[in-house]
Amino acid sequence: MTAVDPPAPVLAGARPAPEQLAGLRLPGRPARARLVTWVLWTCLGVAFAGTCAVRGLPTDRVVLLGWVLAGLGVSAATQGWRRLVRLLVDWLPLAAVLLAYDATRGLADGLGMPVHVTEPADADRWLGGGVLPTVWLQENVRADWWKALATLVYSSHFVVTPVVLAVLWLRDRARWARCARLVVALSLAGLVTYVLYPAAPPWLAAKEGVIEPVGRVSSAGWEVLGLPRAGVLLATSQGQVNLVAAVPSLHTAFAVLMCMVLLPLARRTWQRVALVAYAVLMPLVLVWSGEHYVVDTLLGAAYACGVVLLAPPAGRLVRAGVRRAALPWRA
Image (cartoon, rainbow, N blue to C red; front, side, top):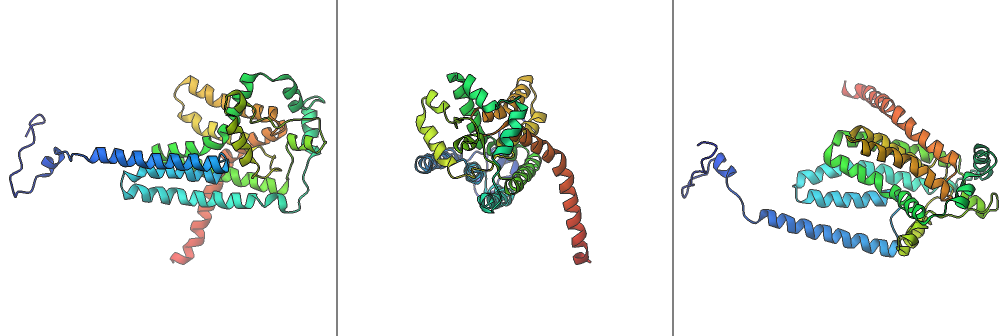
């Protein structure tokens, strides 16, 4: 049979040859798969919208990771049980580590460590030549377009990392594994610092009367965008986080980390420019909005660079130690 010949007819009672099966189509299966996928995505979308309406926009990393996993589960549901098993094997350990991190983070500000309020402000005042950068920015940058942009950039922190992890898992599992290890390492480094050095952000220091009046305006752009309800939902969610976890700025750290992870994949100049601009714009937004001092953002960027440089060799050392420890048991 040549490449252009139609498949030979299958006689009654005869077993069709493999090459004949390859030419047969099972009617209805693609349509059923699309229907199942549509129903699952619809249910997931309704559940997400209902959760946001009741509890606010999700800003917790584990909660967002759960929604990403649900989306990946919908994608894998029509690809067979092996794909679902692979999803669980790959993601559940990561989710467990981040869940443990978040559970511990909530205890960080209750361990009796003194909260540092004046030191970060003094460092920023020195960097600003006697003027707090946050105060200067809030007095001089008030354009509506900037408020909208700043709010979108600030809010992107809660979705960019989980989405990047999901896309990498779908396209390049080896790169996903490396990125997941970096995310865990950066989260743990931030947690240790929060425990040892709890620090107040500018808006809280202003509320305590330590610095000049500063507003927490990270959600101001929702009004400009005509979405005031979104700002209320985000504010509700932020009330559940550790308020003295300002050093380092993990908003900055994860923006820089995602930039470093994705830069090698960027094929066009505009993509590289966009990634670098995002990593630079995030700390500027944080300082303007009263969420962080300049020194917090510099430390956040340093943490991201340190994790990228140190996590791979540290991981190799840990794996080598585990192998050596396991040798006596194998003997």
